[in-house]
Amino acid sequence: MKRQKDKEKYRYSGCKGTGRLRDRIGLIAAAVCAALGLLLVLFRGLGVRFSGFLLLGLAALLAVFRLLDCLAARDGRWRPVRRAFGCCAAVGLALLLGLEVFLVNRGRSDMTPLPADAVIVLGAGVNGTEPSLSLRTRLDKALEYLEYWPDIPAVLTGGTGYGEDISEAQCMYDYLTARGVEPERLLLEDQATDTAENFAFSKAVLEEAGVDVAKSTLAVVTNDFHIARAELIAAREGYGDTVGIPAPLPWPHLTVNYYLREAFALVKTWILDIAMKGVTI
Image (cartoon, rainbow, N blue to C red; front, side, top):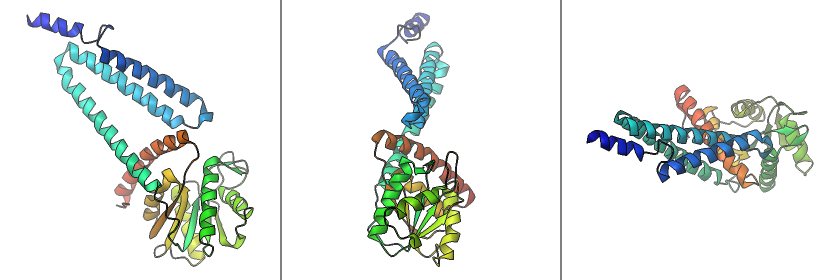
């Protein structure tokens, strides 16, 4: 009798390819995620490759869950494994959603009306000698802030990377001075290659200009998705009070992609900071 029940259970478990509706939906979802993810990864011009990799990862998770479903139907000893896998996936999704809420909240906290002793504009990609979309949005926001507070200096920080004919700092300088910002207000730091170096190298430039970064209020201009991590890194580098000046991207699909990517980058930075220096936001 027990053997017959096991056969019936296996027959309707979906493991023979004619299975339940839930199983079919799962397989279809995995296939759709895999196809869409591959498309986003291959077409780099869309600028959302990270979202493509996430979709491929989701497809793999769905496939593994489907496999565990089949194994659990054949052998009850696999059921705890399937249950544990599902719980881990649910916890991971909940953590990701929580991080996204945190990042969006920080990214929408525009502190432009708050005064500061100086401004740091974080660099981004340069296409030859022209600012990339990300950098241009930062520069437009910096221009707005500098007009709002006309008596404070600004550090433009960013070195020269692949495909860049000039440094990011020089590109920002050219962009801002062409739009009326006084050259004497702009301090260039043209060696940094990442956000940590942006803050580390800018500290020396600011202190040379008479700004004590540990005791002063510094405005940080960067993209909205990057605000939370920038604040964390600034704290690690010994900066005192920082206020974020977020620059949103103009296209929703890019915004979603970078917010998703930033969640993973924030976890990496946070873990390193906790392990190394115990710094929190």
